[in-house]
Length: 354
Ligand code: 13P
Ligand code: SF4
Image (cartoon, rainbow, N blue to C red; front, top):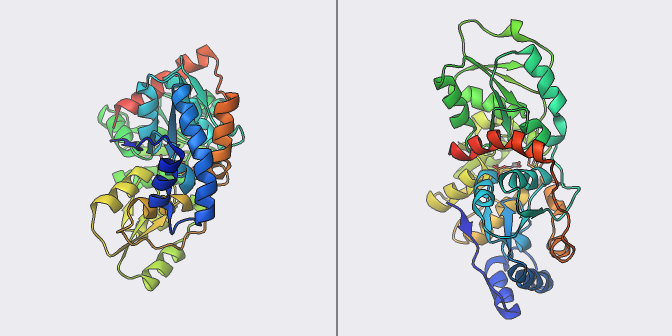
């Protein structure tokens, strides 16, 4: 279920709503300054019939003021496939805007920064996938949504961390014994471990290495530059300092980290867990802003506030740039029609398997 952020349209209402969420999270002087920008955005978006989507990693002042919908990659993809707004303003990174464009090619899709990349998306190209398909002929290709459209165009299925296991299970059930799963090495390894199947490194090998009798996931070797920095020692430190904390981590963390935490899942899984499961406290191993956003949303929950890892790409999306994006219709995602058609099948399948 997508969270719809309540719409507020006067400057006083905006400031009041932001103070209610953000007091104690960011200084009041900053809330006041940000409220002015948020107010302008909320007026403009109504005038322009724009819908604003905010990924869970957006900075707290943005997350708690202008999006009509907030959520993880899968939730926001679903919203972008169903909206009747003229403009989709995607407060997230570039590949997310591309996914929205493929799902809604007739809408104008804007992303506030053209520079908002992702180490996973940058780590593989369509040509890499074509070469892999030659070395592993006949294997279905599943690609993580954190990729650009040229990669999705070479894929049979897309997935997010929210449905990776379901997509892979579905393909095994359909009778495939081996599956290419690209490009996040850790998500691939964690999915293989969850399903009890082998993991094989694919960049430097070919189909000769596939086990004859065993199911296997064949992966690529790139990682999220943020989540790969979490180490098992970080989990141990939290356990020692807060023995009663439930520790949650994103499956882009290494298998060694995932083995030690209590819950692994997409950003939505983490938000839902904090909302729904009573625990003395919660510690998140993921991008820092999300912990702040949850602390603001659920003030009765005790969050361990020790996070220090931030995604430099997500940080490029500010309220100021969001306003600029609407005022100047920037940065519009433009994709070739043929590419859209080729990428759409895999993305539609992702949206269908939830
Ligand atoms: P989610 O799909 O879990 O929101 O994650 C996106 C992402 O980029 C995580 O680093
Ligand atoms: Fe990409 Fe990692 Fe940033 Fe997510 S947190 S957008 S996977 S670099």
